[in-house]
Image (cartoon, rainbow, N blue to C red; front, side):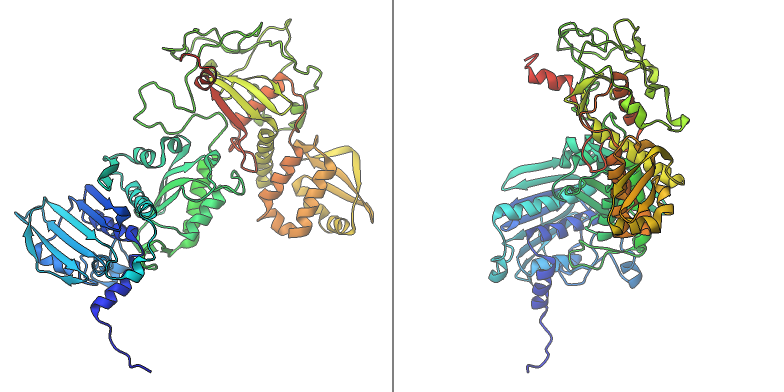
Length: 633
């Protein structure tokens, strides 16, 4: 057996480089973090061949004196910490003092720097870890780090690098993450001499819009929550903007991009009610806390952190995002408008209204509009918008299906705008639908049903299409949740109980939990060893299929136990109940019933998505419709 020996410093640096400098993007990250820690307000990055041939980072930070240049390339030499207390409360991005030393051991590195109060700059060159003497150089105030031929002296390591395009993609992703977290800094990125990004100093919304896209910002909800020394700001995207992968998830802790399981779980739970199972949320969130409350020294590349109070932080993140998502209602306009939009120009999701030509003898819901496609201006607020008679084939014989779904609602929940009105006909005068300032409600007024599945509604700026089953499902679900949180779901006894054949497990479940299941608004009774009777249903689901609902509740209780159903799986069960009780496709609704559904959507939290995360409505603006018919082109 060989004797233990101390490794030379150069070999130690190369071993460390294997952990810290995994690829060119890792070296770029270390260099950018050093520039930010130096207080730079302008940073320029030059790459060649994906960063394999060249990485140059130039900044206007505080710079370094000539005598500090050799120390900057020495292992565990740093100006950022000096004691254990500093290590336990790291407020800078870098702190170990081994990043540049590791990079220098596997490349040809040139470090040039000039403090703001110095007359001249100095530079030092390191080749294969060997330092050359410090020499005078020409350089403006700040620092420049140039890395050439990464891994030139470790051919085995270089073989593991991917193609130039792949390595550049990783470098670009690293650049974008750091630029996203520091909008107050001007960034420029050039690759092979071509400018890829030029980001001026911006506010957070502008920087997020520049890097993640204007559509992300306009589909996002701004967030700004502060509590007990914790802060969370940024943007969470609407569930309809969800992605097939986690690529659009950016979470920063004190300005550092991290992937933390506690944060990821909290954010996933916040989206649970509104996100489709196989989709992933999109967000750009900036979390701040006392540096002493987070340990950043748990991973070689600092991509992971450990929170000292992980449970409290989980709750804070969950409730902050959950409240933001709960504040959304159907028909709402984008929460954020970027400043580069011309004054008065509507967003893409809220296009300007256009002239609407009459079709046959149809009477428009809106006052007459100019026929021109250009120079449109918003309508003056002097009109009173009314629901007019429309000669469409709407089933007048419907007996208030939707209204019956909500019979027995608490009086305070029944607003005048949601009251069911008599069927309109030519003999009846127009019925005004009240709204704020006599304006058009966000989801407009119903025109008709399409194939018994969709509601077509005319809004101020175009056409709204609503999936009536999905929308009603969300409304019922939210009301079931509210009622159960208050005490118990109100139950409607059935005049004629409905019986169904049951197996012995279902019968046993009823015998054991019948009384407790009444909190869910379901009353079941055993008639015989093979028969169960449904004697009561939730008041909002009484028009649903009683047998299907009873079987769904029994299945959940039998598989998971009543305690878990009423706690951990409560929302899943209520979602199933709402699905069984929601108005079905091919149910014909009258115009007043459709309008009642639209008004309820506007007043219900999270009504933009059903319980399974699918959208409940979509908008076609007049510009979208004009484009379909090439109007104004």
